[in-house]
Length: 203
Image (spheres, rainbow, N blue to C red):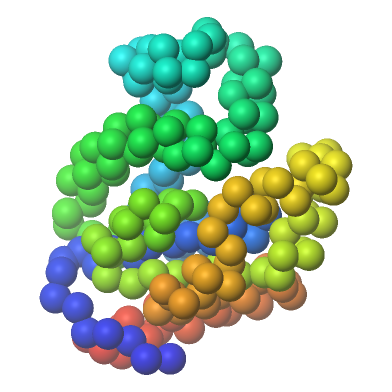
């Protein structure tokens, strides 16, 4: 593995993947090692609950109230069926997410490493703000089968969810490290350990 020498402190690790790839499993392992993880999905969930300004903008843009699970499912159906509508939603949400990420980073200025867990790390350009990009990779067939099992989706619904994101094959081209998650959790953990050892060797 080739590791770039970086000068920032703390080192920022961008962790990304695709839906059903197992990114959360990788994120949880970093946390178990005592490495702080800033989870953009948790930030988005918190913003939906607490940031009425953002929610109001989304409701005004899409033309209906978004307060219940049924409302959110309605919005999800729209954005997973229409790339333009998905882009509109992301354009509203992402600036709020970025602000929260920057706030959370200030909590960990004394740490050596910070993981930024962000599904759309590359799509929104945040990969340019981190020192290393880690992509959790599985095949498209694995993504779809995991989604069908995990979220009780039909094959067509799973296909739409996967196609709504940049393909993992394309994300791999941006990666400093590809974490192959086709086998076991232990193997995924070993790959992360190897990456972290590589960082220590560079110091």
